[in-house]
View 1 (cartoon, one colour):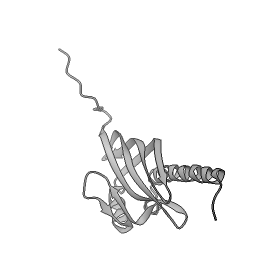
View 2 (cartoon, helix red, strand yellow):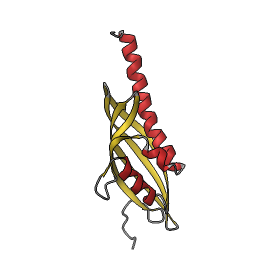
View 3 (cartoon, helix red, strand yellow):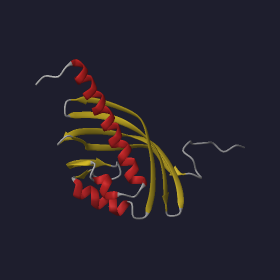
View 4 (cartoon, helix red, strand yellow):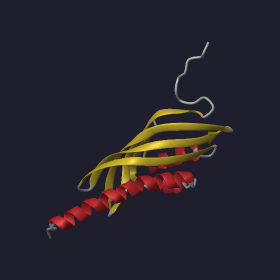
Length: 151
């Protein structure tokens, strides 16, 4: 059964919105400390690359690491400027990130982006892989710009 040009356009728009919602849902789960919910957004063989360790491969590894990492820190991610390219049941995108974090009684501020690959699995979009690229994550009191001491 072939689709009309209008149906194809609607499908592309629905796919892009579902993928953008996937990134928003991930941020919501992190805010709510819903680790299982965040992990469920990945394909069973999904990969998460946080940039500070070897990539996490598969939901079980992601769950184990997230459970440990989120036990003593609070993350508040804000995602925006999501650029998505869809090709059938696969897609890729970049999603920009502003991050607030509380760890060891200190406030941190960060910025960066996610490089994502998505896959439609049984009608739902999932992360096939996420790569976090942080530009900075610094204590709020220090800031992120290098400054020179004034004489």
